[in-house]
Structure formats: C-alpha cells, structure tokens
Length: 173
Ligand code: SF4
Image 1 (tube, rainbow, N blue to C red):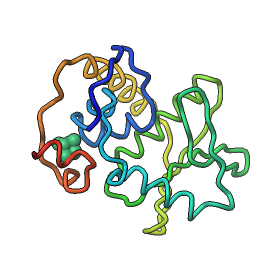
Image 2 (image 1 turned 180 degrees about the horizontal axis):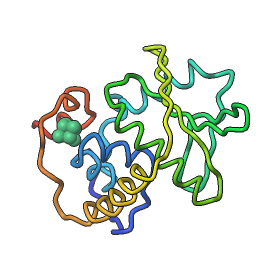
Image 3 (image 1 turned 90 degrees about the vertical axis):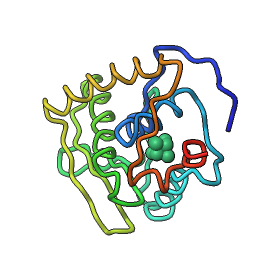
Image 4 (image 1 turned 30 degrees about the horizontal axis):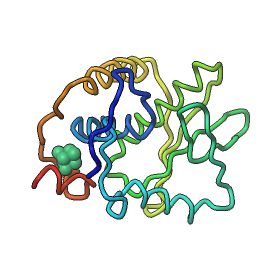
C-alpha cells in the first residue's frame, strides 16, 4: 500500500472515482486519497485489458480534461459514449460512471447517450442521463468532496463486492 499522499478537499472527481463511490464509499475514499493497491490485483486493469482486446478495431479513447472515455460511437445523429466492463455485477455503478461522462459532455454543450458494453456476457446496456439521475449525480459529487475531506475512511461494509475488491487485504487485515 502506498503512503498517504497530500490531497485537496476539492479533489478532481473522475469516472473511476464515481464508479468506486457507487460500489463502496470506503473504496472511493481510498482511491480519492490516492491509496492504490498492488496493480497486479487491480481489477480495473483487467477491465481495461478486456476493452483493448475486444474493441481494438473500433476503439477510440477520448480524453477531455479529467475524463477518459473508452469508446465513442456515432449512430444516426446520436453520439454514444461507451464504457466497457468485465461483468454486469457493478452495473448500477457503471451507469453512474457513464452518467458522469454524459454530464461533463452536456456542460460543454454536447448531448450524448451512453452504453455499457459487457463483452464477456455479450451485453450492451443503453443508458440516458435523465433529470433524476443528473440530480442524484450532482448531489453525490458534493458528498464525494465531503467524504474526501474526512481524515479517516468510512468503515468496512461487507458486501458481495469485497471478494474481488483490490482493497480486500487492506480492509480485512
Ligand atoms: S474490500 Fe469491501 S469494504 Fe473494503 S473497499 Fe473493497 S468493497 Fe469496500
């Protein structure tokens, strides 16, 4: 585990942090405070590898300030922002990650739709940013900023996500 690095209360929220927040607030805090587990057990990396192998022909990574989008497609007149996941287990968190990208694009005057691609399950889950989801996301981002400022992480809450979490050894030591 890396040493605790200095941080600012106004940490830059990115898509992976949004995903972590909706999986587990403790996981979010650990990533936000730049505590990274050993990369050889980081399942985010596995997701990236699946992305690289499966969509290599049409892959277009887009960097926009702090956001990094796996793939962008154009279908008719619609821009579709895609996020690749290794399974549908964290689907709700993946949706909020895509919602974050859609919100950031909307702030730049770009209205886009989303898709979560799960190649191992041959699934494509369409997603749109509704007013309710946008409100939830904006309130959650405020909560993320407050959480990051806390000196100690939120407590361990045992869920089905713990088993494959990169922080499992840290939480259950
Ligand atoms: S092991 Fe469980 S409690 Fe700990 S960060 Fe991961 S998901 Fe959260």
